[in-house]
Amino acid sequence: MNLILLFPEDDLAPGYVRLTGRRMQHLLAVQRASEGDRLRVGRANGAIGSGEITRITASSIELRVALSEPPPPALPVRLVLALPRPKMLKRVLISAVSMGVKQIHLVNSYRVEKSYWGSPLLTPEKLAEPVILSLEQACDTVLPVIRQHPLFKPFVEDELPALVEGSLPLVAHPGGEQDCPAAVAEPVTLAIGPEGGFIPYEIDKLRECGFRPFHFGPRILRVETAVPALLSRFMKE
Image 1 (cartoon, rainbow, N blue to C red):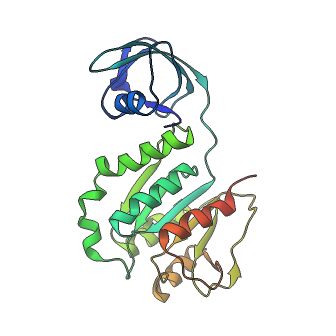
Image 2: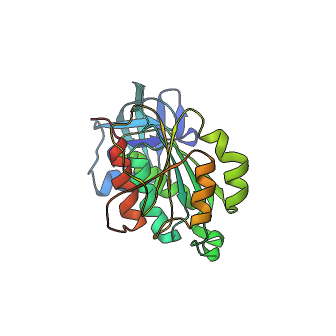
């Protein structure tokens, strides 16, 4: 935990917060925190700063906090991702959010198992767990927007054209016409299909929205490998 993420329910008084549960246990068991220690903290969707532990009890840790630094800049990539296996999704989200992605659209595809959409791991509470862990790791505070689109065609026809405005739409696809671009100077909307890629019909619908298919070499990568590998191409040095 490189940063303690603070939420409104943590507020004790102006400039003071109280931590319980997982964060408290981590501070005591892993970081061996004690009164007087100073820690890196940040308010969800807000500023970053420091917190000084003022009191430790059996049930909570209290801190005096001062927040003045902005969070790190977001990665200028909007991710459109065919829903992977729900257990794999957690790992994919950790990678994407840690790297600064702030908008993720989970979409259906012919090769996506229908049962995935009914998984309890897709509830807002379960999706929040890897997101918070990722922000803590990356010293970031800005929560990403994660939307689910169980119907491919309505999403591509009715919503995607507006989403890609002002960005470079790219779709990772085995057999794509061009190599994966790098050092792109404009925001990117990046579509990544299931393992094996989108089917031809889906690629055609994405092309209608302006997407350019590209390949990432001869290997077919697992989604959890492809996502961070592709996102790294758009990170600024």
